[in-house]
Image (cartoon, rainbow, N blue to C red; front, side):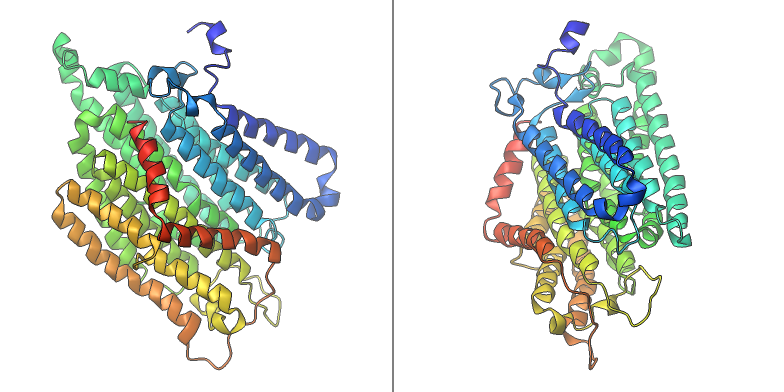
Length: 512
């Protein structure tokens, strides 16, 4: 590929990422020039909403790409760019749009809560924006080096976000634990990548597919056959490094302390926004690069998924701290998503995307309520964590908010006929199609157990044995529109789940 081809806009398939990067640098220059130290608290809310608008415009750039409606969009080679380091297929377009959309909603939601969480530095918002940029690059990564750099951009930003509250020892502890765990994950990823390169001589995912699917490759030289275990070991290391990033059991222990100790706004980002992109790369490296070895990664996936569902379901039963409870819930949900992935079929990939989109809508609703229910205490306190008791008799102070949280919790728990039930049913169906009946039975039983702690939250909302509930600060009316939007989509997909499923079906059909 010559330099003239490199600069052609035809192969420049990262316009949204380019726009976000330039916007981040522009914001940095402008904020520094207007002396942020003087106008910090005044500009903070406007800056967060400005970044939300930038991400909405990025959604438009994703949708406006010619390849989305190109006649040759099913031509696999025509969707590659930057020396095949970046891929622009329907899978990348859809996931980048989802990440941009939910990230923009996230920035709009947190704009009014930065001051309350003592996060008044503009660097916090810029680091969040760079993390989103890394997630988008990861969605379109087509080689191991690009994926590693994208993961490191997300990870380094996340370490700072976790430890950003300088006056809190819990936040510093969360940042250090995240850093150590992330370093181990990166080491596994690089070691696995080097093994895969030693076998194939390439780090490109499409080249992996061409080499591995070529039966003659193993008979050209006896060295190729001898090096085959290196590919299997390397693939296992790369997959396990992604499992650590996704906080799947037994690699989940770091997430409990990180979620609890980090600022609530940072935990919101870790739990809701970051998961999809790591699953996208996991699908690419398993379904495209190493599909011939599906028995290996399918065994790893089903084992880790079942263990994650078990730990997430039973671990949260006795929790009183809300963020730790949601950390166990996240472990459980990532386990269900991994079950769909482990089905090893196109239907499994469809259910994976469907489940993660519904999970992100539900997460937006739950974390918005956590941010907005600020207890009005009699005296000043440095306490930033939340316990289940902070929602005591919420129905008396705000019935609409209590009803919305109830609907969201029922959806997350997978209680019919809400959309969460359709998502979990799709996951179980994908496992049954793969003929893993015992695995599906165990997952269903764990799902029943995990329903207990969601119902316990609803019991605290409505039936707590107290005379007086908590007093809360008034809601910000402009932000309730975004919350209403997430609840509306949950109800809309409950009425018409086919709308989302058809989109996901076409995305997977046009990519694999």
